[in-house]
Amino acid sequence: MGGSDWIFQQDNASIHRAKVNLTWFKSQKINVLPWPSLSPDSNPIENLWGILVRKVYAGGKQFRSKEHLKVTIMKSWEEINIEQLRTLVKSMPERIFESY
Image (cartoon, rainbow, N blue to C red; front, side, top):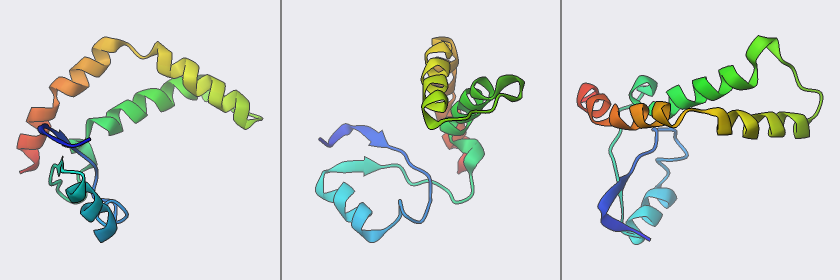
């Protein structure tokens, strides 16, 4: 599963820093990127969540069932422009540089 040609990135939520998790990553030979505390702006997934939330709740939409919410989330995900995702991925090196 692990490999030296890629690095896993996660935030600093306490559950992610738990010894059992860090031990598991090490046992699987998964490289984990050290991440500064309280740096949500550094993580492009936060931007992606924002894009998705705006699509899901556009126009003040509310949901009466979990199923309707799930369908809307899936539909909204499919509507996200691939170029937006590429831009977020390409921004990662600069975000890392700014964090340190």
